[in-house]
View (cartoon, helix red, strand yellow):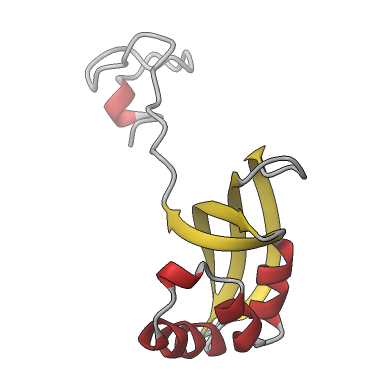
Length: 130
């Protein structure tokens, strides 16, 4: 995973293509990936989670967050990447966005007309909810 990120940062598109699973490679993908990555200024890679992918494994997944800038604006590329090992070589097979995490509220919901929890004595909509 790190080597593919570095290849994007260094614009080494042949390496990216060659480390893509042979059954998933298409020349059009090579061109579109190169065109997309050329426009980006890669900033940082953060590995969030790794499952399998050891020396005795034949598959593995990596959840990562790659930060980049495009036209002066910062962006994040968050992905769950699937890798396959064949003939002692790892290949990128597929990538999907990670499943969204549902946030569950811990406390009671504050209504617009309820007293503000800050203690001001005002309604929430006229105080902290404004």
